[in-house]
Image 1 (cartoon, rainbow, N blue to C red):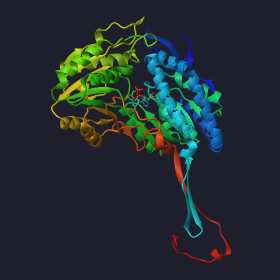
Image 2: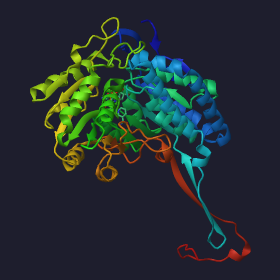
Image 3: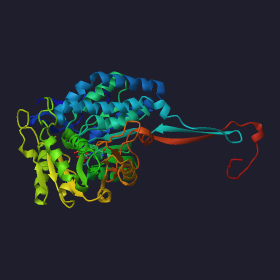
Image 4: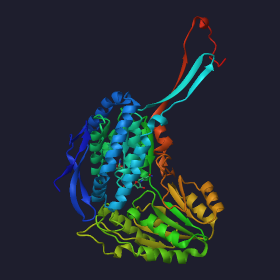
Length: 497
Ligand code: NAD
């Protein structure tokens, strides 16, 4: 309880000018395990100044050297992934195997960024005009800010910073104050990998730090991930300050089960995707749309499986851990009453479980709600916990209409053996990431991650080609090496003669 998690500025841990702190909990025991410092405006200044100072040298560091550092960072991450997973579990609560999975998915973006020389190759046109050549390059932006949520303290920052650093930028990461230690561990790995001081900075904090970064004239871009209201706020304030902003928001992910689907497979996947990481995933399935007459059978199969899930301390042999804080746990649990009052059936009630844990952790077991009305707040709002709502519809068209009317558009899945129906679904649905018999369709690092509608503000998704584009800006250079034959005045507009 004595330890205080600090900032990482100029290649070293520091408390800076921070006088305010926040409690960090062990969600499995309910105890305060440490404190985290919260940045004051002068800490934002120090963090950005350090990143700004480091930028010119890093930008001009050869691609060969930059990728050497990335490869080394990748090796260190590989060797020390279990330590990082344990840190995540201690502050977030997810089971250790799930934390290790998060590190592995983040590492894929590091591996993608190791190939940056290929991704940064520009175009070249010889003789665009007579003896005139044209080439294009993409150059880094400068100081880039990354602001991340609590639910993936390692993976979400890694959606952005490997690409930002590989393309020659410097990064100021503002992690969630709920689980801040993973970011410091990562900072130490970067240092060990040989990254120059100031290229990767961690600024711990809350709204003061976020607002400071959004307004700072030396911050060129902001990559934000969090809830929709804050994403919208960050997008509007950041763009008003002239920055490039990508702000990924909340979600309400549907899983459609067509009558021809294998119901055992669908039930397994609904349970995995609904209750994995206690539903605290932006790609978790929270609304299961049963089409036609299959609902009774499907609900029974899911209820049976949900009853077998072992909930408890993520360091023990459990399937599902606690929620991140007591406040969040109670908010999630309150939706069970909301749904019941609105006429839903509470088929499995997670409030009644006995977790495998010591102390008073923030547990809520898997919860299954059936016949949830689309007008209920249990459907219209993001719950972000282990609560799976079943909605019953008559037809495929009803299912698509429901999904397309939803203000969120992060992920969606369809379960069917009908290729034609699946293809039509992928074509018609207004959602950014689609799974066909895949419940959590998180794109690989070489594709880009992001939703539509209220799940993303801005034009650019994370990592893959779009990530490289976000962290660079283009230049086109037109070149002619003059010889005496080019002499003479001509005030006409240059053409490609
Ligand atoms: P959050 O919006 O509360 O916090 C996200 C970040 O914003 C944190 O760093 C936090 O310190 C900061 N913040 C919080 N309140 C702020 C304020 N008033 N002003 C400025 N900054 C503020 O989100 P969370 O609870 O940490 O994370 C869960 C949310 O993130 C869910 O809505 C989830 O769907 C979303 N999420 C989305 C994606 C995606 O890819 N779309 C991925 C992961 C999580």
